[in-house]
Structure formats: C-alpha cells, structure tokens
Image (cartoon, rainbow, N blue to C red; front, side, top):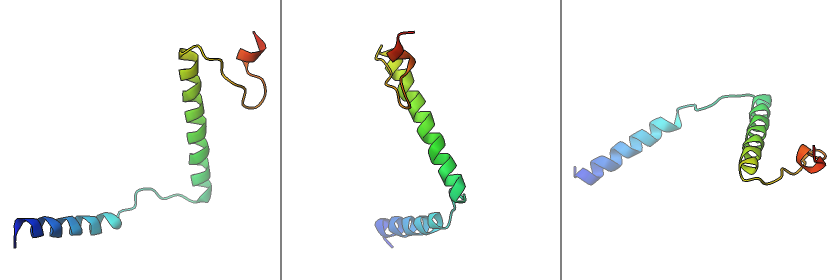
Length: 70
C-alpha cells in the first residue's frame, strides 16, 4: 500500500470510531435548560462589553437602570 492509501484507511477508521462516541446525552428539558443558560450567559457578557465602551444598555424586559438616570 502506498502512504496515501494508508493515510486514507486510518482516517476512515478514525471517523468510524468517532461516530460511535457520544459527546453529550440529555433529555429534552436538559437541552432547554442548557439553551436558556447559554442565552443568559451571552446576554450578560454583551452587557459587560457595552458598559466597557460606555454604551447604555437597552432595556430587555422594561426600562434599564441606564435609561432611568439613577
């Protein structure tokens, strides 16, 4: 066998082995919880960056503290 065919054969075996590996197993509510957690995390992260650049944070669920002039 040539070097290229050996490489392709090893790559196929590795891909086949990877397909059998379970990366994350969760029920429906686990997925919903993770998605909600990610949205909250990224929203807070965006708020930090907006404050660092002195940009007022828009109110998501009503007026924010930046809009009311506390």
